[in-house]
Length: 382
Image (cartoon, rainbow, N blue to C red):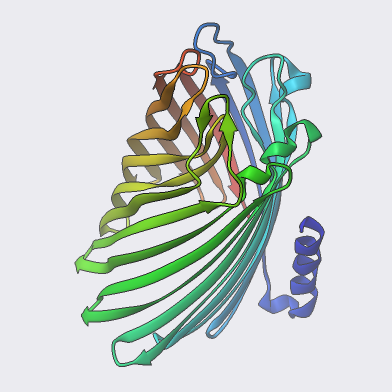
């Protein structure tokens, strides 16, 4: 996947005349202090972390068509336990968009990311993994005020160590639906999604799902937009899973959905409110997924060269099956708050400070923690 994306980046660059291609290199450096790098509940260890990154983006626009590509590499260096924590990240991607007024839209996107999952103790290295994504979507007008849309997506998660092969998986999804614009800039829609999730080694985690949904989206009034969706996901596993005397349900139904309200009073002000509920993959004991319920608010304001960005939220993580060692269903609550202040120095340079605090509580011993991260960054783009 990574090689294919690099090849496509080079093809885009060579196929277009130089005057039509916009090349933009970027760089960044962030120094931050993390109070609890192993997310420990009783023995937090702090560290200074430096993240240095360089990369570039390519873009081209010709009438209704636009092309894009990017690549970035980042070095993550820790002041403690460097052998377990230091790593190099990669981020590559390509995109293609074709839009003809409101009658038709076609887009394609592909990406490859090398990142890590947090280490859970100083005896465990950060889990490096590759994440490959492909997606395509098509929308067309089929009648006055009526549009049809289809999309397809694929995800591949691959951990670099064979010790973590039980989390390697492929996901595939197809979605289609229709929308009706019943008043200007406001539409209702109905959609249906079918998906397949297949693990490399955990056969009893393989599943298929289907998810019908109904929703509403558009402009409520000038500067205020809304997206609301309700759905029910039916998930069916190909094999049973039992631990001791406990057996997991092989077919489940989960009500879910999302709600997002955005207010942009002017180009320099943005406020958001978002609520979302849905299934997330898991390989924990009996629970092959958990239900995430997220609520968050954010506010961003630009004043001259200054950019203020703040947010607060809560996430509730509920496992559907009991943990055999405790006999209880795992429940975990996260509270987080972030704030940032940046200043633009001309068009090419931005400096900033940011703060993040996070607190987790759980009904299982050893899963709660508090963590605070304070950072200073310098970023540039030419």
